[in-house]
Image (cartoon, rainbow, N blue to C red; front, side, top):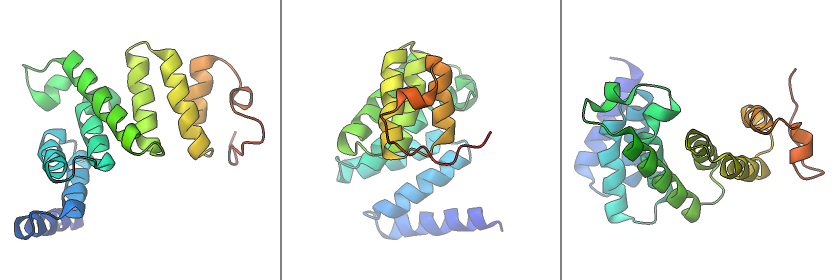
Length: 171
């Protein structure tokens, strides 16, 4: 049995024995997301929010799950079937990520995912703001630096505040 399958079974047993184990639910949902199965992850995130409606990580997980096909460039019909409304997926993903950021403004994963979804919605100014906020938290995100430069057409060092360390940038 693979390690991930074993871990998944262990987490499923933990959840069955302890309905309030938020960490087990989060871990299992992350495994489902890694397996390209956002539909299996969503109920776990909703369960968490039923007991802890201020859980930023669950909102982030839902945002990523709803936006998964868009963010991973997988046709939504492959993940959700024929009756999927891609616009609804996008709207829900944005709502959940915005709520995640309200609860935890320093989560770069939510900030970056939201920026990418804003780009899909042609909200480039908002996307730039999200990427900049993310870089203020962790300046060494080279992929984000590249995306921001590509989005603005401006050298990154001009976009960031002075004296911000951007990590060692590889050519």
